[in-house]
Length: 302
Picture (cartoon, helix red, strand yellow):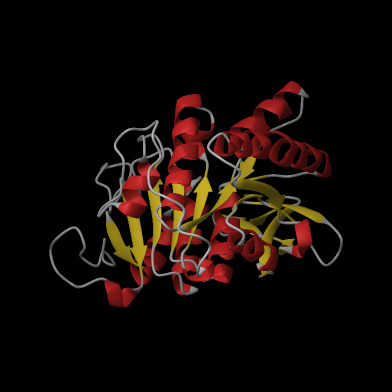
């Protein structure tokens, strides 16, 4: 890995075996609104490509969507960590995600060569969704046109990877009922990682990782098993809930490793993927966590 942020290194290795070298990266959080972090992220993604991996980027756009809703005088509301999406809100979501955020990210990546190609989950029926139920304190809540992915057809993404491109995917999906749904980017990235049989799922966030005992402690769980995460999941809230749910789905779906990385740290993606340890939390299958007393202990009892 090159320490110079402005010098992507390596040489193209060609599109050999993209299905087994895919790394799905969910781009979101502070890195999306900080111009320098966005620039460094784009370079990091190209660096992964030069290192022989085949990155697929799934992006969010929460801050940009909220800003546009405010400008239009529309309400921004969240339940169970997900944006409540009315039909009017859905129009704004589609416009902002695929019309603005995606185009900016594609442009940043393509400043380094003809790599990135933008698409949405609607394109080529890549993602199919159904309306997602949500619960707060055990009671159902209506979150509107929020979807949960029930099927992924990764053919178009694989074709782009085989041709040496970097797919940049907006998390919007159509249902069999013809309705278009707003899909949480963390869960969309997870579903795509499973369908691609990716080597790794990486999610950027605005915190140091998953805290062991928040808010009483800021100790970060560096590594935990899928079963341990399943036990912790009911106690999570806010934006961390869909991220960790996505990690759990990915690992249980066959992805060998899922990471939540601190996107405020420059080069977090390179450190997490190409380095030994990333600035965040790593989720692995249960068999990959050996009992013990170090940072890699099974935290199912935390």
